[in-house]
Length: 66
Figure 1 (tube, one colour):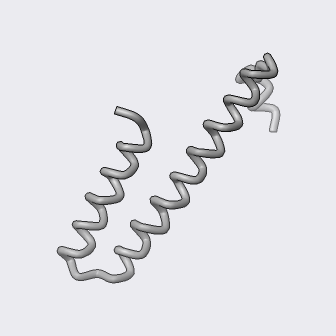
Figure 2 (cartoon, rainbow, N blue to C red):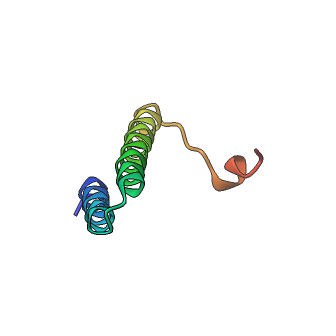
Figure 3 (tube, helix red, strand yellow):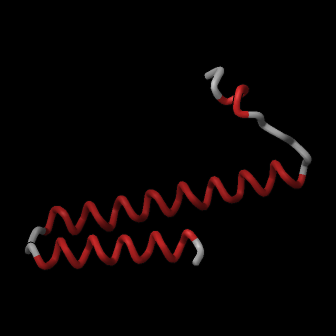
């Protein structure tokens, strides 16, 4: 199962819980957070693809220097 499907299922579950609790704010949070996480996943996927195509390797110790 791809991460996009898992994310979609998680958003649907949280949305169903929010609707069952009749909490409009929680419904908005579930939808907006799901959209943000989906966009971040898409950016990460495309960035990894670009790095792989150009044979660029980033090691963990280089990331930790920030």
